[in-house]
Each structure stands twice: as C-alpha cells, then as structure tokens.
Amino acid sequence: MSATTYILAGWLLDGSGGPIREKVLLKIVDGRFAAIEQYTPESVPAACAFTDLSNCTLLPPLVDSHVHLFMSGTIDHKTREWQLAAGYEELRPLIKQHLHYLFSHGVLAVRDGGDRGGFALCYRSERDMPAEMVLKVAGRAWHQKGRYGGLIGRHPAEGESLAAAYAKENDPIDQVKLVNSGLNSLEVFGRETPPQFSAREIAELVAAAQQRGKKVMVHANGREPVRLAVQGGCHSIEHGFFMGRENLQLLAEKGTFWVPTLFTMKAYAANVTFAKAGADRLVIEKNLNHQLEQLAIARELGVKVALGTDAGSLGVLHGESMVDEMKLYKKAGYSLAETVRCATSNGAELLGLEDFGRIAPGQTATFLVARCAPAQLPRKLSYLEAIYLNGKQSDRYRKNPVKHLPTDA
Ligand SMILES: [Zn+2]
Image 1 (cartoon, protein in one colour):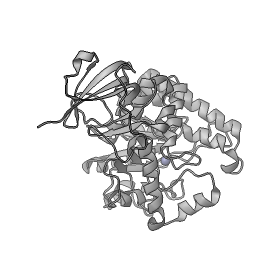
Image 2: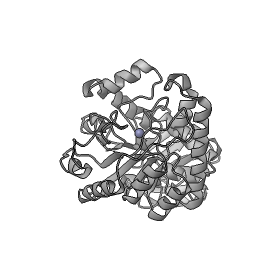
Image 3: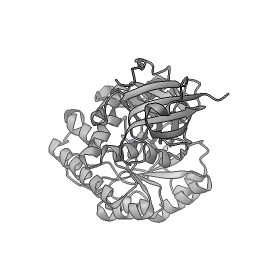
C-alpha cells in the first residue's frame, strides 16, 4: 500500500526562481511530491496524515557549489597552517564535522573544489559519510609549476602537457579542477594575474575529461584567465573577480556557470588583521563592491549562477557561510526566489543532480522547513525548523520537532 501524506506550507520557494507561493498543499506519495496546489480545507481527504506548517516557509535543500572540506575557515594562523600541513587521518574528523555543519544549515549537496591530498575524495568512501548528503569532489587540482595552486593540488611534470598529466590520473573524482590565475590582490585594487594555461591546453583537458564524462571547473580571476577558460570550453568559472562585462556576456552565450564566491572578500575585510601582511581593508571592500556589480550584470545578462561559498577560506565557515553568501546576492539585486534558485536548482544542475534542488511533482520530497515568513530568509536558514528526507522528517536534525498546530494558527 502506498503512503500518502499532506503538508500545508505557509509559503513555498520551489527553487525555480519564480514567485513565492502562499498557502500551498503538498501531496507526498511514497516519498515523492505527487501534487502541489493551492490549499483549501476541503483539499485534504479525511483520515489522511496531515502536517500543518502554515507558519513556515518550505524550500529545496541547498547546494554549496564550492567548498574545501579540509579547511575550517578559522582565522587563527597556527590552526590554518596545521590544516594545510596535516595528513588524512588528522583531517578526517574535521571533514566529518564540516559535513555536519553543512547538513545543519540545510546544505545537502556540496562540491569540493580540491585539496592537495585528495582528502575529501577519501572521505567520500568512509563508512560515516552521511548517506543523506551528496558530495562531489575534484580531488587534487591542477596548476602550473611555480604558480598559485599548490595548497589544493599538483602540477604536470616538467615538459608534460596538462592533458597528458590528466590522462595518467586514476583518482575516481567527479569533476576536474584547474587553476588558471593567481589569487586576488588584497593590496592593489583589481590587480590581475596572468593565465596559467593557454586556451588550447584547456580545450585539450576539457576534451580528455569529457571522454571520461567529467566536467572541468576553473579557478580564474581577471579578464584573460577567465576568457581563455571559457573559450577552452570549461563548465564553470570559480570566483571570476574582475572578469569584466565581455566575459559575463560570453558566459551567458555559452551557458557556462559562474560561482562568484563573494563572501570570501567580505570575510577578508572583516578579518583583515588575520589576512596577508599588507592587506588593505579599503582595497578589499572595493574588490567586494566590484564583484557585487559584476553579479548585478550577470543577473541582467542571464548568466547561469550557482551559489558557492569557498568555505574553508579565511573566515568562511561551512554551512553558516551559505546565509552570508545569499545575503550578498540580495545586495546585488537578486530577489529571494532568484537567490534560492542559485543555491538550489542551479547548483544541482552544475553538480549533475537531476532529482535534487526543486520542489515539483515527481521530485523526491526532500526539503527544508524554516519557521518564518520569507522576509526572514536567508537568516533563518541558520536555525532550521526541520529537514525532510524522502517525505519524512530527519531524525538527525530533530532538535526542534515540528509542532502540529491547528490549521488556523
Ligand atoms: Zn576554492
């Protein structure tokens, strides 16, 4: 016999970016959404299981499209150095903890942007990897010898091409991570770094990755590094500070994703004394404002944006930073529904997850419950009321069981 339940949502953000719906009845059959319609008291058959969440907003589970699970986001230098030097056995409990933080904030799918030992990759096959979460990993990133990227990866051997180096790799990763620029300057506004690879080298890597069914994500800041990566056929630009309008146009035309990681810059500004020596708060704030302007242009041009936090970066905490990043999208002019779309269905598309990130008939009934009206989002995501997995409230999250209030509450 099939199990049917009904849930009344006060407000629904379905992940599509469309208008927020009010007083919606969700019919769940065998763990999937069977119907979603306007609520009337008559629409619930008598004797059917009914949960009243009329004072809550429902939304799909979140996707953080850019994290580094081996780093905690601490601002303490000694701890950061320890994390950057530690081995897998030492980092294992840390990775487990970070996944727990993410889950607690409703982030049920994450894409790890790489580490120097393939640590997130190792953790994915551990017995205590949470079964209710999706973890996509890049393993060890590729960078050019002598350039930025050693903290999260390795480089091709002397005289070896990027594609040839990749062809020798056997790590069971989900996507390939390439580093094609340096880091953003915290001392000089808008200082660009040269690309690490040519468009041809990137195109060869993309083709080799495609043969194995994998996408290529590229760390790139500045006009030239971004242009070469997009022309090389990469699937997403990570960070993309100072890429400029022409590149944003190119992203829109080619349907390439952008993961702007804005909060990293805000966190640098807030923790400037812990950042690099010589870092200037005013420069950092200008960097952030420029990125906000780029995001506004991306919205206008229809660039596919997936929300990623770069959690693990200085002052960027796993889970909590989703809220920080979403607030910045709103500051750039995105509506709440558009922001949620970037943090749910767009992320799911980038990660290649078909049955994830939307609340729609036919989809698995996995969703978040925030006890508030939409105006209190994204803040309330830090204090979720409940997480439902396959139509049932998660025990793992059950710190505040949902109270069954009268329908007219
Ligand atoms: Zn990163």
